[in-house]
Length: 343
View 1 (spheres, rainbow, N blue to C red):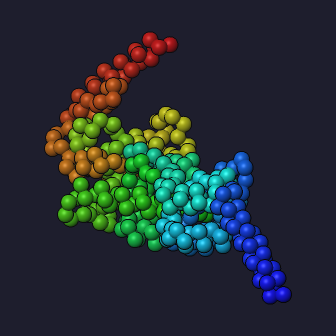
View 2 (cartoon, one colour):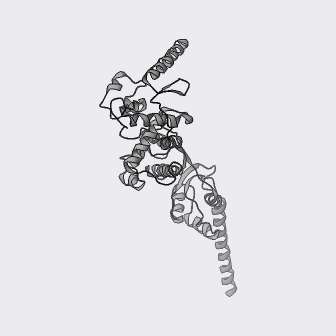
View 3 (cartoon, helix red, strand yellow):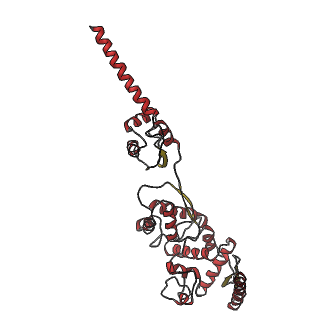
């Protein structure tokens, strides 16, 4: 009788062991789907492993959250899962998935913000990169608390969104704060090369960045930037109007159709019209690069008050209005001639 009981008990143990063994084998070796389907998952910084396991089950990448947590505990990998955006597959085994989440770098989204771009243009680029909506970016770029945190002396971050190529891990939800904040941090990081010691603040900083943004728009030739900055410094010192087209274009916004008309030049209702309004415009007209900022910090000393584009990317600088008009006529004639030859 006793032998029968023991034998029965052993049989039950063997059956249970077989079931457990098969379940373990199935969990470790059989993926949720065959063939697998690609899935994009997002693990936030500080997200618990329990929350990650539950999310993986919800996404269909994993069948058993408890088994996955046990696997991570046994392999001592639960604390090594990285935050970020990852492309995974429902065709992966739990072990493969765990290995990937502890070693992969994750998906990075590139945001290109070249020199001279406006805040709205950068917002559109952030949206195109899948980081946030343009609306969310602009909201963050005008957040008083964020601007105060980074000592931005204006109502928006226009001009202070440092031009660069950025790589971001996308955040959950639609919030542009992390993108704007990264660009403001980069501005102050690069500012060390412009002001190694004392940095301007308040109105002086706003005026500096405004001037640098104009220099950025006026020439794409790095060697010319200090000379252009010197021209504007000379004009301001003499009480002359800046008379720079890029400020008018910025003030027109979406109304600008590709050409500046006489009506635009005479429109004093445009706060950025430097043909009718003295001094600097109300604020930056785009994001200046490092070269333009350095040029404004160290403008070339000279007696030039005017310059005109040659049509070849460079400019001719003049000391007098007569010389300037002669240069304008010369290069305007060349421009008209080239236009006729193309027709």
